[in-house]
Length: 408
Ligand SMILES: Nc1ncnc2c1ncn2[C@@H]1O[C@H](COP(=O)(O)OP(=O)(O)O)[C@@H](O)[C@H]1O
Ligand SMILES: [Mg+2]
Image (cartoon, rainbow, N blue to C red; front, side, top):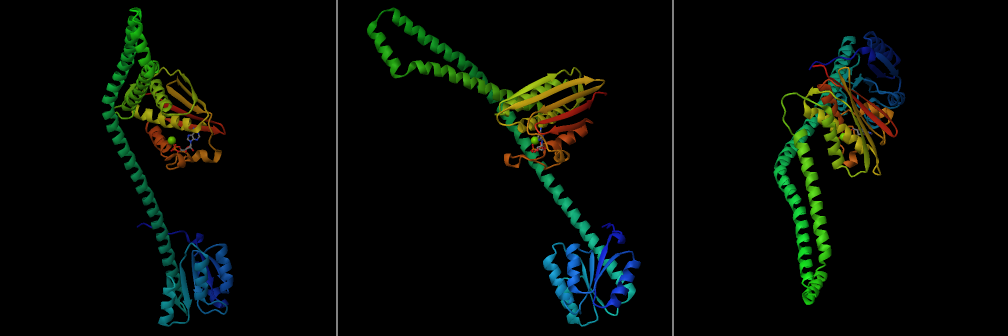
């Protein structure tokens, strides 16, 4: 590992010893090495210093009048969450004493009288180990985050794959259902028309008894409602099937295509279709104001472009209150640039949060199942296509501005 040894000037060493001569000598040695040195003549004073600011390393004498070194170290461990290396320094050079020091968690033990070079070497080596430990912890944390990200990505890839398969499987049956539902509307209208015709024929024969019997049977079976219901229900089935068919078709075309090549396309179609999906999936009552006047063609992966829009428009829809609001979309081509804006009059984004919204896992919608990945992916896709983007927001209004380069 390539540990970056921290500059001694930024490392603080606390020396605790009741002997002023020792304190003076040790300070001098370590100051010569450019460490920042703090001293304490007693255990109590040392605890106060540490509570204010933890040092990077402590040289701790064992035999002191008030609290001895072991007691000081026990107190430190109780009071401080973040551990730092402690080296005991003592004239009591029994093996038992040394063992006690190491068992308490000290990283080293220096015997008095000490050798200057030995103190320097041991301090330096423990600070280096500490640096390496910190670096390792940081790397571990990064690794853990990367692993989590990978797991999320795998999960999403799997969901994407399943969605693609399900969409593919649903596509054909939904077309049958849709066609069937259309015929059902026509046939049920035809059946009721025929019933009415037969009834009128019987009526015209003036067979009173038969007519009364038919009227009774009609009444008993609530035939009038059944007729109306039949037409109404088949209309609903037809509308529902059409809606699902359109959604599936839209998803299949825009999200699940495996286009390996960039294509030239008019952006307005993607914007319209992304809006359509968001509208279909929403149960809010909102208006969409579209002002799509881009009359140019963009050369990029259509699927990526669609995903960018879908994420931003979906967020806009999620930001507006349940009782309703307004989404505004505009597109323009000017001087080889395509400008798209997506605005909403929803809850807005706090100024200090704006910088965070593109970070992976940043979400204010945890309860509603938000993952925080939408804008992180959007940012990557925008960077991939070389688009510029910014977000303006104040309470009650948000606008995403996207600019794509049309030069090929
Ligand atoms: N139009 C918007 N209005 C208000 N907040 C927004 C808007 N777009 C994004 N945000 C904020 O950015 C966060 C991150 O968005 P995103 O990455 O798509 O994750 P998610 O939608 O899963 O929360 C959202 O949780 C929300 O706080
Ligand atoms: Mg989102």
